[in-house]
Length: 378
Image (cartoon, rainbow, N blue to C red; front, side):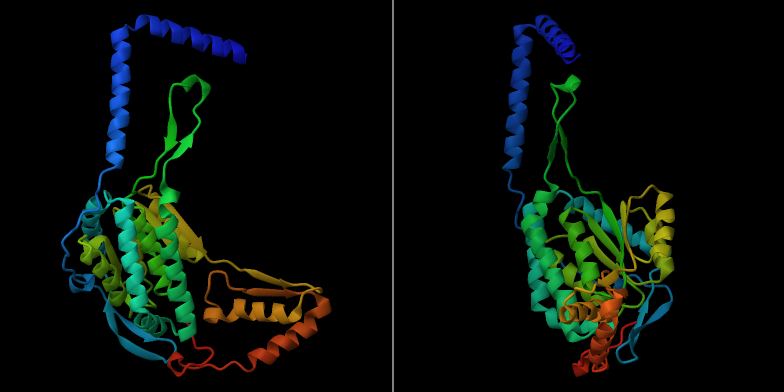
């Protein structure tokens, strides 16, 4: 069967050549050479041109006509001002402005995007104390957890994107079927447009920075609805992104952080965006997917779970105890991979409980500014 198919294809090929004149074959060859030359010259272009810095403003200067929400510090019980929600009409306008910024940004090279992310990385390192302060103020976490969960993880994400992001987005070859043996097949990745991002409060900076940096490196704009439980940091974090973009000469409205509750998030999902990233509960994730389906908007969902931690009889109890406590209490347990259920085999159950109890009884709670071991988290 295979030989018969090959023979048939060869016959068709020979008959086609007989129908073509030498001039036609030469013209086809010349077109092929010109095509290859054009792609080579295009690949050598230097799009990394010097741009003039731009000025920028915070989105809250122009938007925020909805109801007020108090910014609450769960570590101290104090309020730190109020923030205005973005209305549905304002969400639509933010998306329109992001579209304008995207039309410029989508044509940037990986070299340019790497430069922007490198500047962002430098800005994070330079302002890490302030980033931690805002994260502590919004979430109630300790300084150590802020440095580890907000700064270290974000910097590593940026480092990876800068060094390896282009490899993940380069074209990938595919083998065409036999009947298309004269064809070449490949998968190419293009910017998708406006990414609507809805994130929770447990890592006020990292949740935003991780999603925004990935969207930017892929050539997209990012419109973020931050949690109504972590609004005190919104303007500072948005300013950090916009300052980096403006300094490089790009439209700062490529990144916008919006304040709001569920209504603002719903407006974002239903707006004219091109992709949705939602991090949160399964119940809300279902509503997000249902709303996005109305416009056939692609959705990425990272939903909560119930991660088990298992201790068997042959475990090293000292190590198991430390890992279990770390998994349960880091960030006060508000972590996507936290140990939420612990199963202990009967033979070591008593020993494990005694070891855990002894350590937990010595935990101290209080405001993070007093450098205690633990603090209250929502």
